[in-house]
Length: 329
Image (spheres, helix red, strand yellow):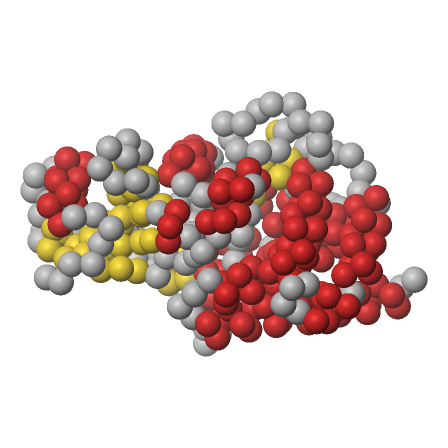
C-alpha cells in the first residue's frame, strides 16, 4: 500500500496491535477530511475492522498562531481536550465515537494522537434535502433531543468539565475580547468592515452592556454545525470534533445552530433563551467567521473557494446586522 501518514508504518502497526490486539493487522491507511484543527486517517485492518487515527499536529493546524498565543483557543485543541470531553459525553449518554487510546507521551512524535472508533454514516447536512419528509423529521428531531439533553446539564462555572474554578469574568466577555481581536485582522483585508470598525465596536459594547449576570451554564459543543454531527445508518446522531465543548452560555450554541441549520433550526429551538445574549453572540459569530474564512484563505487551506465564500458571506452578514441595528434606533 502507498503510505501517507504522520506515523511510520511500523509504528502504526505496533500501536494498533498494542491497543486492539495482535490479531489486528493494518492493511491500509487513508487520509480523511479532518478540517482545520486536526488530521484524520482511516485505518483498515485485514480482518475487516476499521478505526480512526486522530493526529493533533499543531504545525498542520490553520489556527496555530492563535492557539499558541491565546489561552482561550487552547481549550479547543489537543488530545487532552478530546479525552475530557469524550468522557463527559459518554458519561451523560450523548453519542460520540469511542476513544480506544490516547497517546500523549511525545517520546517519538511531537504531537498527541489517538485511536478512535470508526462509525459508518453521513453528516447531518446530507439530510437537508432528503426526499422523505418523515426521515428528515426523525433525524432532526433526534438531533434536537440530543442537543437539549446536552444543554440541560448545568453548573455554576463555565469551562471544561475538569475546570471548576470560580471565575469573576462572565463568559461572554471572553467572546467580546475575541470579537475585538478578529476585527483587528478583518480590517486589514476587508474595506467594508474597515469603514464600519468603530460602529461595530460601539454596537458590540452596547449589546454587552445589556447582558445580565449569570451563574448557570449549560454544556455546549462550541461549533455545532451539520458537519459536526454524524448520522448512522440507523438514523442515530452522534457528535464529532468535540475538542471545543465546554460549559458556556447555551445562547452561543443556539445562534450558531441558527446560522448553520437555517430553516431546520426550529427543530432545536427552545424557550427561555436570553434575547440580549442571542443578539450579542449572533454578531460575534458573523465577525469570527469572517475572520476565520480570511485566515483559511491566507494560510493555504486546500478549499480556497470555500474559505473565500465563508469570509464574504459573513462580512455581508456583519454589514447587514449594522444596517438592521440602525433601523431599530
